Picture 1 (spheres, rainbow, N blue to C red):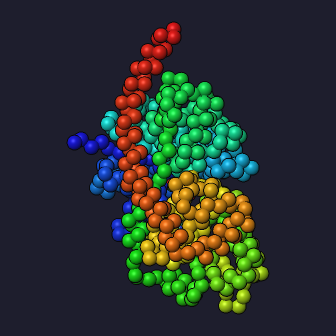
Picture 2 (cartoon, rainbow, N blue to C red; picture 1 turned 90 degrees about the vertical axis):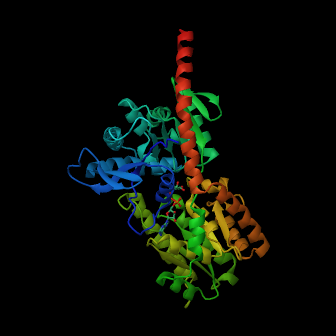
Picture 3 (spheres, protein in one colour; picture 1 turned 135 degrees about the vertical axis):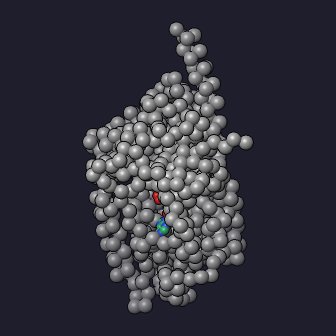
Length: 477
Ligand code: ADQ
């Protein structure tokens, strides 16, 4: 059978380092996509240079070629820090008040998408499937279509798609919606996101439903489908069972003694609700004083996007909240919250998840949240821990057997911690089994395969829909 090539485009490209496993969730997910396909992975090198080359640098790694481009420092400022991370990210996470729109940033965003499209167009072959990732690159299909690329192009949106009233608050939002139907397939994390995007297209552009998931926008047809991302379940299970140790693991185990561990693992981002979570833990300790000295909460939060001012503010907030709680509730020999900002290997994270009686995953909004899934996968089948999960994480649509909480309600989160710490072995077991089954059904390889299958099928749909829409046009005339 002839196997088509897969062309993946994402803001950052994870070029495999000999001997090292891919780190972040997106890197693992996209490497999984390439297990079954030959292809090309294109994106920003992560580097800035005064005069970036017009053509990408190509790095050959057997089955996959990597093609990366540098940006100018103005590009990085306007496209990445500016429009993507200061305007789009907060809007997509329902934080209208934090969204800083600037026309210059938006122009930079479009400019980088255009230059990526023109560099990429030379590398696309007629039979390739093209798969674009995330909010940095929403206009890419439109730019590729403008220069004659007719291949099937899909887009996966990793973060939430907000309700039309929220998205509509962003200047230029209608323009961004107009480029959506240049994709054949748009994948989102949850049914809620799919519904939000479809409603925006109907309300703003007069799109018409052919089916629930298929919309006609003028002469273009786009499918918008919920395809929730998964994790490498087997990889996490294996890593969690390993017996080798690191300094952090040894120290954590020694420091815990007979205490129970509660764990939080997030990029330092305001969408993750870290100060709010610390305050909920404080509430738990105040409401249940007998628990003082019996539990330790470890929060791992590597800094990210430190050039964006809102992230510096968050870092200060977290440090203040942490200092206040540890100062007021700590005792000689017991620090309630341990806070570290390093990144760790998957092996270490998996072991820490397994050590923890409670996984505390309480984002204010999150596309999916892979940590929730990783925590479940890493549990010891003989004594599984309990996942506390925000109702605003995409994962809550699937992991309904977690203790689901509203992260804005500190009392509710505090009581969920109390419930989790005292849950019977039978209840923990039943909840964990149910969630693990769901993880297997949406394992990362299945996720990639599902998206690619739908994208490949969309070419036939596209050709048919063009014919039908053309016939309808001539009949209307
Ligand atoms: P993120 O916002 O980055 O991803 P998440 O889904 O939790 O959020 O993924 C984070 C990944 O980074 C996880 O795989 C985690 O193990 C890893 N990680 C976190 N802290 C780490 C540390 N200290 N050391 C090493 N690794 C660490 C975006 C969206 C999410 C969506 C994903 C994938 O915001 O909603 O789930 O993409 O689609």
